[in-house]
Length: 201
Image 1: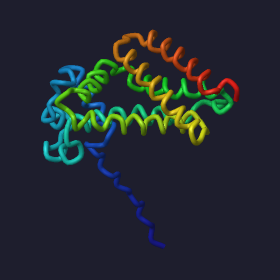
Image 2: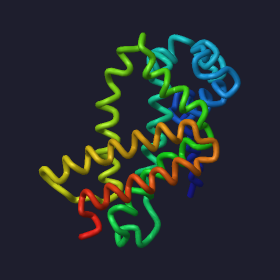
Image 3: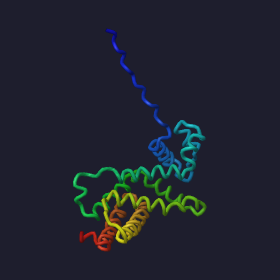
Image 4: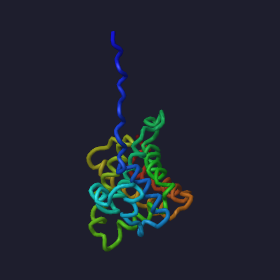
């Protein structure tokens, strides 16, 4: 009986423009040059792709920045430790938010430069999208923190969480060891807990 030949599966070639690879390469390059001086042609060269290939997937540096912040969102949405669901709502929110900040912590300076670039007065096409990005992030934050409020109570949560996140983000961007921003976030969430009645649930 003839022997069967072993089937050798060919691995699919890795995508040089895969999000994490682009994000890591851009962060490494920006650590050398600063985010404002990052050139897309240099990023394409580091990735080993043509400038036209990079432009099709990432039309400008802001799109690369969005890839970096998307990784922070994914870190926030990653499975939490057992017992997370039994925590108070305020503590679940804090853990979820801190996961977002922790994902960016090794690149805090560059991430802060990315945010300032989005807010640059001449970049109206970028900062005009920021309210939508924030709304979407807070939506996912509520999902990650297992919040269940509906109607006006949900709207109040979204407003309170947006304000707390933005205040903590502003402090974090200037906080080398993140100690002050953690204290601020704790204080803000304590206030949100009282205002939203989380401590009565």
